[in-house]
Length: 429
Image 1 (spheres, one colour):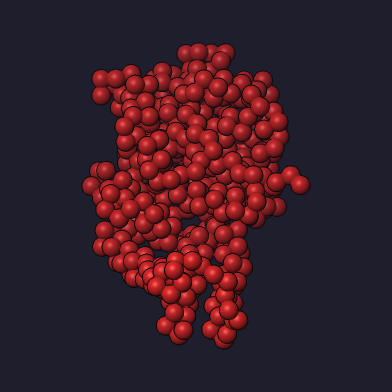
Image 2 (spheres, one colour; image 1 turned 90 degrees about the vertical axis):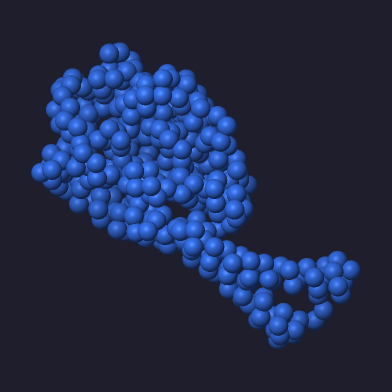
């Protein structure tokens, strides 16, 4: 029998700076899901990568005295760059895409032209508000009078330039009908409700090109324009699946089973991206899951606040597996998680060293002491054996149930019921 496919993606990260533990959490969670699906017999494609165009990258490269590509290559492929980070964290991705890759540039130009030829992209003039750090356009009806970015809280810039627009408004009702008919498309429920309200307030056409800077994919029929960075970035999921260069692969893996993203970019993935696919006549992904943030001292991590924690630093002190474990266990379903060095040390000592570590050490010591290091066939099971076996079998059932709905932290709790029962079993026998 042919294996069931499973296509899962992280967002492609914006490499304007070093990635922090929040980015690592998202990638580790996706990795955990990909590994779980492989264990259940699925043919998995796990995609991650980098979103490399836009005004912010151009500005940062210029400030560093480098070309944008030189600046990016150092962050992505250089020593202690993003590729090294994912290698350190034992990430099992099958593909890594960069939006500067030639095949992606060709793909986005084809997608842009296809939507233009359909009449869904038209030339106009953009006058409005733009968040440079987030590379986000904001319509007036979504802003307060102080014109602060609703996502990052920084001041917006007023911009005015010739631009191409995508007819988002044309598809608003169709989007609402789809989300109504597919209640699990946006998860968790709180994110779904937010997105529905956002669209019901009125969906404006989206500006999808820029002329005020040059670092981007040229619009194929009007090269003084570059494609809007989010329009470019979202299309990577099609590119990596083979839409341009591998039709058999695309037929096998598309639609994506889940896009796992941070809650701050759910809007792009659950509204703009599905409507782009509607325009292209391509099947929509099955799920967009928006996870919470890892919070430090009650605030989202930010270099400006000086509260950023990096996975490499934690791994140096506690080991990679401990970083993976903490990240997955501290992020409850649909909520934010917390991270401090104090809570990390507490979890490490109580759960990994004392509970799990104690079980491993006691078990190995007794196997060596009483059985010459050989695991033999068990004798007749007694009362305690049956209870331990029952705990383990129930855990398998519960973990399968919870992993299907992305309750990863709850799955770890189920596994620890076995660990705790096994420690008790040693005391009893």
